[in-house]
Length: 105
Image 1 (cartoon, rainbow, N blue to C red):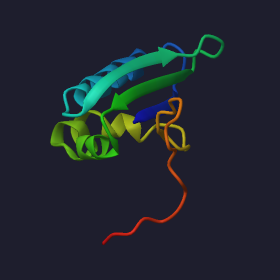
Image 2 (cartoon, one colour; image 1 turned 90 degrees about the vertical axis):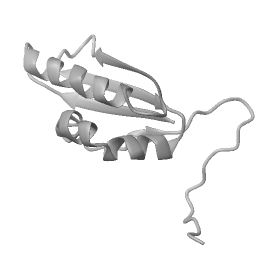
Image 3 (cartoon, rainbow, N blue to C red; image 1 turned 180 degrees about the horizontal axis):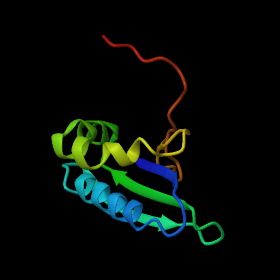
């Protein structure tokens, strides 16, 4: 699973960068984390991105429940732009997720 969180921060806000790096480190320490990167937009330096890759959606959701993530990452993640952030990988021949309710039992 791929998670893309985009943020707006004032140019030159070194504290935001440090907070984003701490959030990434907290997420990276959780089971199921595969990879991640922080980036800043080339054309608009107020636009930042944190991308993380997870073994599956459950691993990401469990990571968000961890105490250290709630402490170090959730405050930063709550500043993300209000848009969908979870994506499924699309590889040739894979069956894609469908937008239908799932049974709980």
